[in-house]
Amino acid sequence: MFGIFKDWNKKHESELIKEHPYLEQLYMGVALTKFRVKNLRQEKDIPDYGLRNRQLTAFYLGAVEGDIRKFLDASKMPSSSLMQLVILSAGFAAIKDKDVTNDGEWGAMIKGFQEAMDNDLHWFRKRGLGYAGITGEDPEENWNVFVSKVVDQNV
Image 1 (cartoon, rainbow, N blue to C red):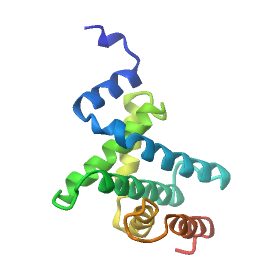
Image 2: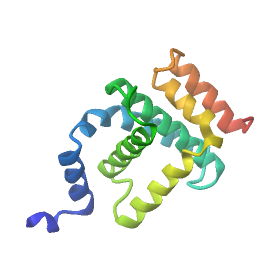
Image 3: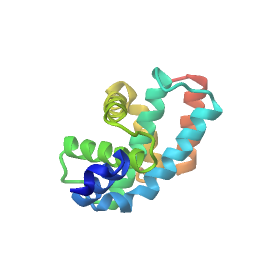
Image 4: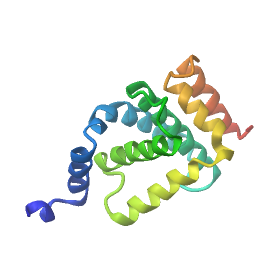
């Protein structure tokens, strides 16, 4: 009954944790990647819209997917279910960090996540998977190649 008095973030964070308790365990890796991508966005003055924004988001979601694949056995999971879990995990981090604070911002963020999963951005998602360390490649090398492509736009 008193849940109606909770602020938007606390209410949604507690609901997500109740339904998906593993989100708290995934949070630290997701938040660290989000922090690094956010710093790159600020350093290179990349706006929250357009192609470079979608490239950053695709990388971020690829890294989240990599964290999930390290945490869970996703080999038998349908790709649509895995992508929903990626969006849920990234969304949970956004709620917990107060990057979104209402339904409108949540909807816009989810739409941006869905746009970043476009096949045209697969290269960036794959760099994110490599950054998460599941492709057998050096994570920092994946980060550096990704940064140079986003900054130089030599994709």
